[in-house]
Length: 349
Length: 262
Image 1 (tube, rainbow over the protein chains, first blue to last red):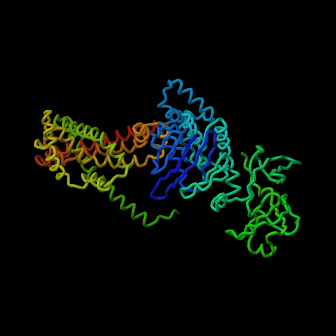
Image 2: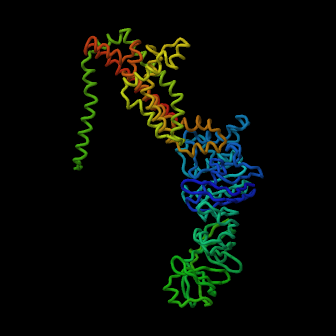
Image 3: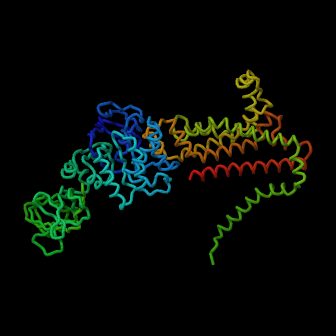
């Protein structure tokens, strides 16, 4: 287990303020925050590249706050992979094994094994300059994993990768995690957090402001920042099912129509508040999701009003002041909430 | 028809004038020297040993001082420390002070009554009038070129590559030798070539430390003073041709090395 206890660092541009959290063995821990929130600084502190001004770091109960980087047993993969450009892929992987007491033949075998595991065996003799972003990220992962780190730290590993390759790499990260690797992954992307994380901590201005499972953090944002940062209120754990050629997501007793290419039935859905249309009476539209419910709350929001409707699930719709007046909406009213299947975004777990 | 901007024309003309300014005197000198005279000069033992002395003293000075200059350049590129700007300014001093004045300063530094001079005497080495003194004078005026170029090279190595190496279990010294040095190598080689070339062409500081043994720039000056332009010219042409050949050879070797790296 990795624990951070009141880690503080004063830097000219920002500070880390008493950051505390624990990553348990087997966790896929996501540290979620905007750019400049201090995420990378936290990772560099754990890796030993930055020495904190205050606080302590423990790995399996051992205080490693001032331990040398090379003795920590922590692997860090950088956002832009930091693959050594003057060595080929094999050289990069071997670099991580230099200090190991293994024989040359054993090291060679380890490199081959790791390359096969991460599907980069055909790239071993290539120079980094000839590789794509996705390939470089795999090389960087392989180079770190070959050391068998106790904790794998990932700094925005998907940020510089094409959308097309992102799902491949996500699947790879899931697989690495399933094989027992404890991972701490920092990102600004809530989609990544949802699709990969088993635990999430949200960091803002150098402080951890919420920590929990994805459900706890997104369904019950403890501050406006988390809710706004995540950009979502309509967030539900679901199970997918197919009926009559269309896909449905079930949450509680409610079935929601959606469109997705994902086959894993276990996941989350998100519906943006601005995609929910309200009406007083049932209306004839192409939208397949139509739910009747009672308004429990109307509160002003950044772009108008947020109307909360209890339809069996709690939906949050964003409407303008004009619409509110036009429909004469008030708390306690019965309304219809409508949204398209394509407005439902699904994330498999 | 493609439109030609007047400004571009003016700049091209200015560029041509500058090029002519550099090439014309050199070309004039070379054309005024017959191949026979050049071959005759090249066969003179005195000339041969002078050119050889110039090359090896500059090479030796460059090599020995690079052992300290390259790590120093790394420090300047990577670390912040008090009065760093002052230190950077000091490094450039040899470029801006008159080289004869640098020679006078060095003379005091290496003469027999100085600490360095006494240390040299203890092992039977007198820097004045000695190739070791020449190498020191050459290095003094040319070392800024190596430090500045190498520093730019190290600054261009992304710090995250060094950090990545550290997290992969490498010690700081291993990171320096396996990551920083190879990645800054191109600049370091350029710096070494510049330092060597600048050292070879040094006259002002060397003549004060050592008139004899005579390096080629001093020999050119001596022949001009004693016998006139006609006698100084063939040595000058020969020295320029050898310097250029060495310069091109080193550049080619460095480039060949880089290409193999790709």
